[in-house]
Image (cartoon, rainbow, N blue to C red; front, side):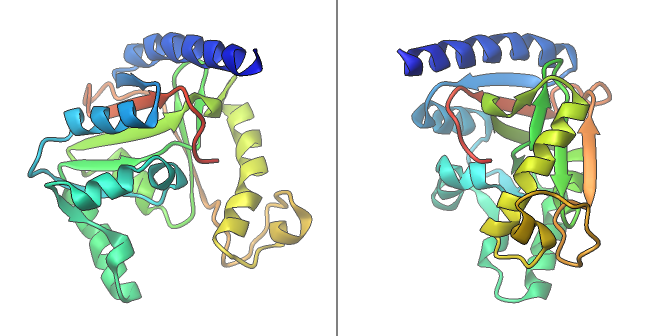
Length: 213
């Protein structure tokens, strides 16, 4: 019964959120399973397109990264870099690709996309450069407003720091202390209000199953 209730809530939330996001000039898709998500990504990105992505647990967990690596795409994969300089060069190439994939850290009830980034390359690419941006995010990331998004990210950031084996104060405390540590991963807080200047450039795939943090 509990699973059925969660499924009902996530389905309803996705449908309502889709309406709000379309008002903000985002193209919106809903995927109800990992299989449906992968088919949706295939339908969005044509074979032969150049693609890249930002760091994302969601993309890894859902199989999207494996799809990019095995598919017929020109894939700039920063995970393949052997040196820091090579990784940097791949990240710069990401600004010229046909499709850039990422997740959002939170989405507000009225359809705004919220990001928290360490190096800034991910949010920079979302905002400008790639011809198309594909955001894949579970509706478990939906919050009431931007202020609650910030609170959510303060809760999530220590877990991401732990996952990345960083040595930040939040690893010891379990909560954000707004540190000045050089390994801090929460340096750029960005809210995308609309895609009005380029309608449809940002495509959002809402999943009704949980993924990522």
